[in-house]
Image (cartoon, rainbow, N blue to C red; front, side):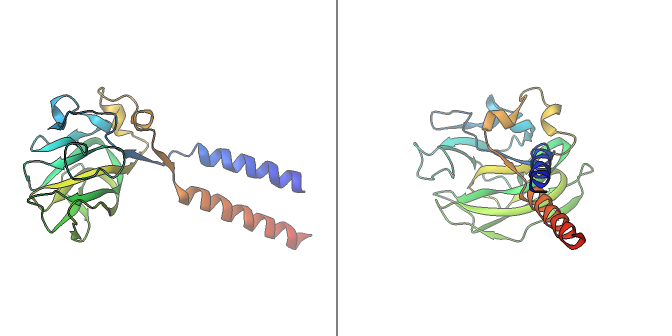
Length: 212
């Protein structure tokens, strides 16, 4: 009995590992800049997305007082564009991102908005307070969006942009980035998948005990 259950655990674990849903984090560490430069100057298509041309700048926290959430690189809304965002040719699930107020001209709050392929607003967060030079996670949990906008204007940072790949991977639509999972080395298995497998296994074991 125990050997049979152990074998079942292995099979379920492998199924969970091969599940399509997995969180991808864009940490911008694969890109470099001496201080700050336009993201689209040479890195348009990063992560499989089309980034707005109105002011996303890659910056290094070795040159500016705003610490990146991870590593040394992040994005700043360098021209105070409102809104500013990114889009994909295929739907994706946006989990959230780490944000902070820039060291000057920072807004007090921002919010994220999600749009479908027809550019209709289908989801948005509440207004999220910003702290200058201090990263906090803006939770969105948007499902099946084709575009994400950040609203609030002025200057703020963005790092560790986290999203879930769908059956139609936005990366496959863009030849500039072949594999963001390998590029960023930040792939997180969805906890819900493993929780579901675990609960199913416990239920099965309970059923076997009753029958015994």
